[in-house]
Each structure stands twice: as C-alpha cells, then as structure tokens.
Length: 456
Image 1 (cartoon, rainbow, N blue to C red):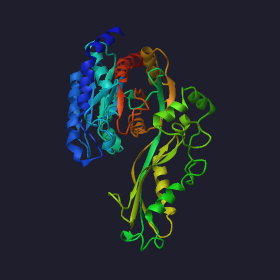
Image 2 (image 1 turned 135 degrees about the horizontal axis):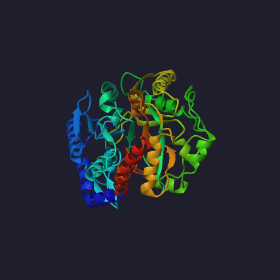
Image 3 (image 1 turned 60 degrees about the horizontal axis):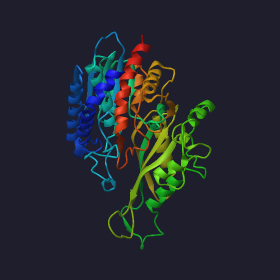
Image 4 (image 1 turned 180 degrees about the vertical axis):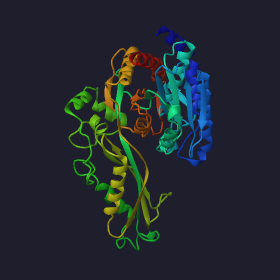
C-alpha cells in the first residue's frame, strides 16, 4: 500500500535510530549484574509502544525479569493478533572476538552489529514500527496486542505462570512471532516449525581434591578424560545418537516434506566458506537442511575442568563439567528427553568417578499448520512485498513458549522472521541487515490486512 510506503520512507531514519538506542541497553537476562538494565529495557519498550500509538502498556513484574504487555483495541468484534517477542539478549562473551562493542551498535556495509540486533530486539521492533505506520495512516484493520518478555534466553521460566493467570489480557485469535530467519531477501521463506530443547549440565567428580598429575597420574581416574569418553560415546561412526530411546518418539518427516525442503536453494561450498570449515558433519542419510530442521540433535555447549589460567600447571583435576543440549522434533517431549539424558549420563559413569546432573531449561517443538488463515496471511504478505511466494521450511532453533501459548490461549502460532541464519545469533558480531529491518516493517501491515480479510 503506497500510504504505508510513503510513511515508512519518510520516517525510516528515525526508526533505525530508535532501534540503535534500544540495542545500547545491555539486557542480558542470564546475568545478575544486568538486573537493573532489564528494568531499564522494559521501560524503554513500554515507552516506544506508547509512542507508536498503543492505548495501554503495562509492565508486569515476575519472580525474574518483567514482562511488557500492550494493546491497541479498535473494535472488540474484530480479529486480535498477539505479537510475541523478547527484549532480553544472550551474554556477549567472548568479548575479545567482537569487532565492535556488543552494546555499542555500529552499521557497516548495511548491517547493524550489536547483541540483540536480530535476536530479538530488531525483529520485535519491526512490529512496533508497523503498528505506528498503520495508526498514523489510519489503516489499522484489527486489534493488536504485544507480549514482550525478558527471559526467553533463559528458558522463559516465569512466562507460563503469567500467561495462565492473564488469559483474558492476552486473549487473541493468533500469535505472531518474528524470532526466526528466512533464506534470503532474494528467496523468502517462512518457518513452519521450530525444534524443542532439552538442556542439562553434567558434573563428573573424581578425587576429593586436585592432584599432582605426576604423583597420581595413571593411578586415579581423570574426571576430564572420563567426561570426554562419556560424551564421545553418545554418537556412533555414522553420527547417529546412541542413547537408548533417544529416537523412540521422533515423528519422521514424509517424503513429500523432504522433497519440499529440497526445493530450498542450498550451496554447500558457500555454506562451508561462510562457516570457515572444510567439511560438514552430521547424521548419515540426511541432507544439511534436514539435519538442522527435521532431525533431533545432541550438542556439547560447553566443557571445562582443571587449570584454566595462564601457563602450565600439572594437575589431575577433581571435577569436570559440561553443558549439553538436545534439539527435539515433533512428538518428542522435553520433559521425557531431559529425564532420559539425566538418567543416561548417570548410568554410564565409569568406575572411579561419580556423576551428578541437573536440568537448566527446556521447551517443546512446534509445527504451524500451513492451511491456517494465519499462515496463508503471512505467505500472502511476504509475496506482496518480496514479489514471490515464500518457501515453507523447518527452523533449527527453539522458541519454548510456542506450545505454551497454544495450550493456554487455544490459538495457533505463525512465524514471520526476517533474520538470516548467517546473522551470528548467540555469537560474537551478531548482526541484522538494515534492509531486512525495513522489509519487515513494510511486510507486517500486509499480514494484518490479509488476516482481517480472511477472518471475515
């Protein structure tokens, strides 16, 4: 719609400036030292929603970080879209690998470099500016609510209780989320599903203190060695996960779905060059896109033990620790998988060491029905601004709250992400293309228009 385009082009510099201001707030939910920053960021989100034209925006405290809820109700009889996003970000470490300050956003070659630029401040802020666009051009056709939380990056531990106790506040006809990626601006896509997550931590304990590796080496089991052997035993020579029962509940993708995924453009040479690797690794019998979308995985996220300081210290450590996560596919339960992982690592403990393990957090896999009005509205909206229909794909990441929203609110989720897989999410030098940011703002109003038309 030309009126949207005119308004957005006139105000695009301000839109970008506001996003950069939001990115300067170090809203790291995992760190206690950033608790005050979380409050500051929530207040900033509230202010921006009010400035965009929301009628009411409140900040709700939780046992952790606050949740921001806003709304613009034009007519209770019209459809309501609930926009979900999160203002918290991942820790920025290792800081020495950043080319610029993680909370000092810079724009280089049309890309915004900052922690949270894509995940998820840049993406949820597109919706704030889309709301402003529709209000200022008097073209809003439906009601819009916002639920922007501050704990997604730590598993959303308090969101479930909040949603369950505020169902009327969050009541909607669909939940719209921009926290995913598309293939490219040239090849738009829509995630029709995300994987679930099971995240545990394992501690292997040997002797009652650190020992001299010369005096005791060869006589006492080394916890680091034992932990490494345990982890290595979880994959066979075909990179198939060996944990008994791991694949029992996996819903196998159909040949038709695999054929659809194969239609997505993929250049293995470019893929490897972008990552700086000579060879790819994964479960035998599946393509790269299938391994990262329709198959479950087990990954080592961190491992440590023994001397970490400068220089050498000949020590046989008393403990070794690892953080381990599994990505889950439809029909797998995070609760069941977590119990399976905890039991397995305790069971395979070699003689001479003891193993303790506990859960960090988890979430369920989620699939969006492609025959739903919301999905069709999203696909039509993307086609309106990109000039071509989006390819449906499976996302490899996890958004733990999807199953929660469907269970508590009785509505479906639709994903409409504008990031790229190469945006370094959770890594140093996270980025978000300025063009993607503007494209999202241009596309979102079409979703609301088409969803309203399809809901009549």
